Image 1 (cartoon, rainbow, N blue to C red):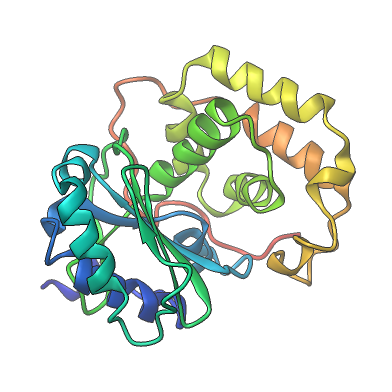
Image 2: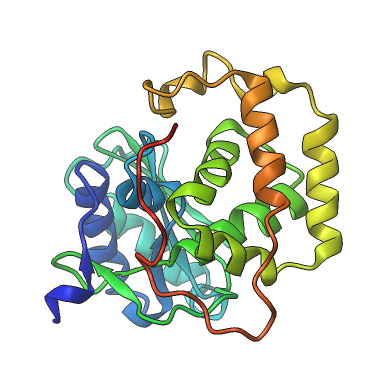
Length: 246
């Protein structure tokens, strides 16, 4: 494996992802699996803490397991060192486990945006989603389709303008402008206090003293960034400008 195509994810998240992938790849072809979510962004940008591990699978590969395959997969996951027997489950919607005290999920989701230079979790064959792919999922799937605006997603979106602007532009360029408008209206009309409270504050970098209003404004500004033109080649990972938050 080319070492230049590998990325580190700090433990315990990296360790849990590798253990889970080791079991999953016995049931699902590795090329259909990927590691995404805020945990990957946090590893790249070092902007916040992460409290879970989100792996993703192409839906057709997950559906192909069938009830019997999911039952065998659940049993295999429970053999992972550090995995709690309860609650661990595997159904037609998703797979969930708690490993080393972290929530670990496998979600059947289609990857919409291409990645020019896919990278892998160091020491494994597990593909890491690009920042554009992750931001797309947060905006189009969770914020728009799910109607869910939570602090960690809002904070990731706000930070994307500084840490990887090309990825944010590419994600926005892949989303219907009407959907972006809906998300902006949801954010604009929601109470700022919902974006930052005692339950979610710990994930945010303590050096950055965000207020609810400041975070809300930063999210609206991120959603107003001019998107990349449709059909443009996606940016390579690491093409953004990393740097400390103001």
